[in-house]
Image (cartoon, rainbow over all chains, first blue to last red):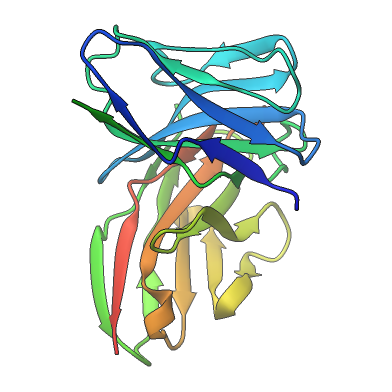
Length: 114
Length: 113
């Protein structure tokens, strides 16, 4: 069954703690993306990766870090520097990164701060 | 910088009513536009997309959208909504490099049975 999986579905973070959100795809897509969804603001791009071992900052990268060591995996770390981390995080992937490519989304992880 | 505006944040309709959700974009390059839908508890999924050609684009579940270049708009329409159309709808534009998908703020549609 092909698709994008994100885990966990819900994640709780304590003050000063780093947490990592998982994103895996078995679609053989080259490009992967992380978005943050807040009510009334749509989705905003955090980081994207067009190829293994390469990634670029999006609009709101501060307080986040990523790695792309494998084609199928693009984990996102929410660091303690992110002052307002409570949000719904969506991972996406596309075959390539051309403008005609459609992005496909995972089910999301909801991060809550205790 | 590209941007997308969706002016209707919440829309409530009765079943069988017609739907039009507004989307205006700002982008200086060649425009590729998308409408995504997020049903309650489900993944964000693609409804339809415009890349080139016929400005009237048909998508899944009876939805369509019209690209009007002179108005910088890409409004979503459906002639007769159903209760199952209750969802949040997002308009998006992608940049020329294909690495930056910019979303509007979303429109929550509630269809009353």
